[in-house]
Length: 356
Image (cartoon, rainbow, N blue to C red; front, side, top):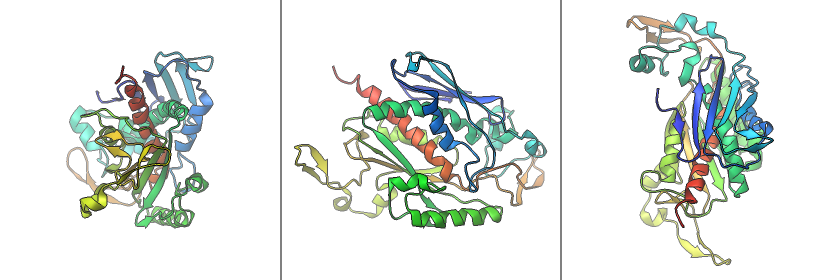
């Protein structure tokens, strides 16, 4: 099963299934001598783990990370880093009565068609549980980026038709929906609670901003920063759209409106009066903040009765059991941050081999 690795220099390979013994990741290409602790990795995993609040899945996983290799006396060795998180709260029996039935919106049918065999327990490899490895690996990437003055902030921009108007990074972790607008956050929470009581789910938009980026990061033509970001973020489950800067809004504007005017700052450096490009020109960073967004579909697993078929094509009524997020957005925030950081650290390391 190819397709489990991501990155060029800082390369990760995730492994494991939702209801298997464990999930994890192998990180290759991390420079030696980086100080990293299990606590730093655990901090990021705790932001992602299930059971955080009343608006997330109630699966209770401690998600305790184990560093198996590549780190000695608190520093990276430059060798492959293997990280493992054991699954402790999987309830596989919830899926036994639907193992031959295709859940609407899921990869059950397509996995069967591709492989002829699949792990039906919690979606197996196609489960969002796979992202544990990405978040663990990205904790290391984040440490490298922070040492280079680069910081990444993710937040819920929209749930349903409710859109955040004010962006305050300090507000993000002060509410359970991870919205930077405290007023809109409460509206979002109420909407999520309403759809959950209805046995349904709701989608939304997560925005990610990275600050402190120098101009010149990026590798044309096929490895532009935005191309890598699109690949990484669209590889997450449930993602249905990707934007940079103005995104699709740019289609309604004239060039004279969309172009970012350049000027010379008091410091003598060149800059831009606006950031419609989202920090990228020609797939290369221009020194402004990187701004990207992903559209997240409503959670496919819902307790509301749905019509489907089994493997033989017989009509079935399906009411999905198990524990699922009524809205993927709150827990998608640290996962989206992780993918952005994985792309940026790879581009940072690549930039160091492009000039003599």
